[in-house]
Image (cartoon, rainbow, N blue to C red; front, side, top):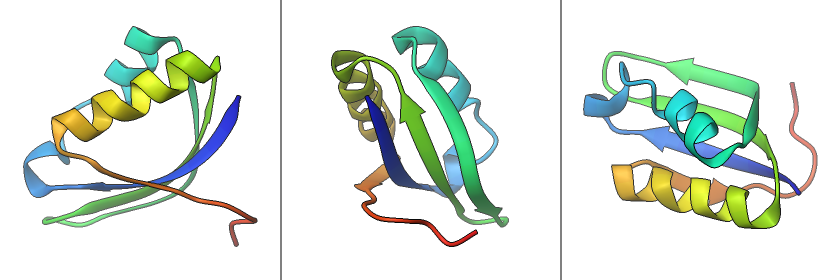
Length: 78
């Protein structure tokens, strides 16, 4: 499964290795397509590759940590 998502990180998670931890725990390979980080918020467009079950669990884990996750369809301008 290959899924594109937009992640929005709250300020308290900007410096945490949230993506690394999710990728390692759920065996999901992230591909960062775009990112913007400021002092108060972080935004990222990712492609997540892995089994359907692992990607779904990884996305849910991000949500439980407080990351806003939106599924992205179509092409991303780079």
